[in-house]
Length: 99
Image (cartoon, rainbow, N blue to C red; front, side, top):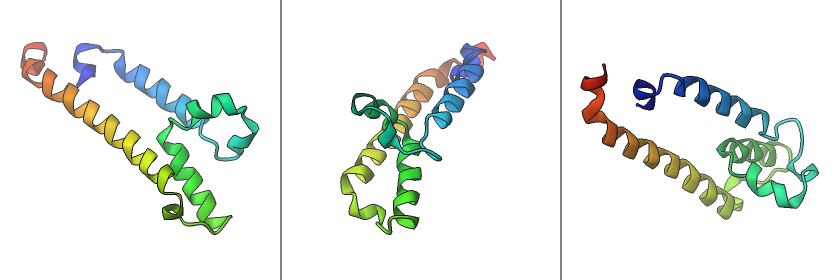
């Protein structure tokens, strides 16, 4: 919904998503990053998906054995969804004016 008002928003989102995927520890372990910076990498929702697969297939630990990581993932995912829904609802009445 923001793209209607800000034409470059699509490019910004694409750039941020690409950066986020590059910062997802798929081929490298998050343990090589200093502890003070790991928090920022863990804000990436893809981190929990990748880490869940890694734990399941390599370490034989199921995702429900890490309830705090699962809860943290869902809090981030639902917060992003709720924020998007709120922005969409606030901007929806103005779509006809701009288009």
